Image 1 (cartoon, rainbow, N blue to C red):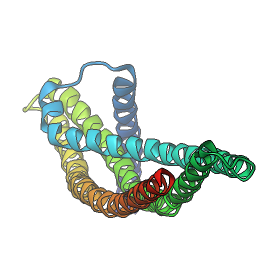
Image 2: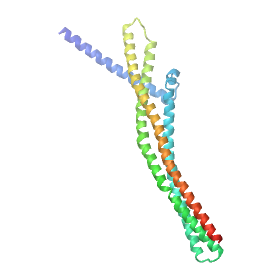
Image 3: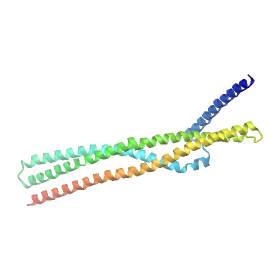
Image 4: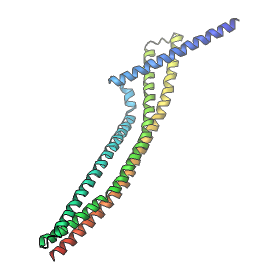
Length: 255
């Protein structure tokens, strides 16, 4: 009976210590969250050790922001191209209508200008499909690649908070540590074990984030290079067609 009572007492003590350890872990994690939220100065060596990671995160936020801004710009650009093409085409039709009623040289000039304007409007509208494809590619990139990287960043930030909270906990315990007191020494070892565990998780996710951000940057370059090349080809072709048409109409008018 005596060994059984001792076993139950030991189990109860372990359970109490486990609850206390979880509460302390949560306390130091919350303290770390408050330090970050209030902008208080953290240990300069701990912050410096994450300098490469913070640089990657800064680049990631830049990619995230610029992709969102690019989508807005493409949308506005498409809208304005469409409006400009409509106005240009309507002006061309108006000049054609007036040219049919004017048989003088002015009428010929209006007819030539009308054809040039209508051709220009048509070629400008031809820019919309490559712009639409670019919009879809950037939107897909934002919804998939950026969202996936953001998920990994969120997980990493959570483990970083836990790791730094554990460091604060260990620092606090070490300041009260008496090497001659077994109980305090045992507590320090357990906190130290907690620090090692959180650091291992943080380092793994830190590497994952750095790799994903590098891949994200390379993917964005490839995507924009392909999309902009297609758009550029349409721009050049449109300019050539309009220039040839304008020269042809002017030559015809001169004779």
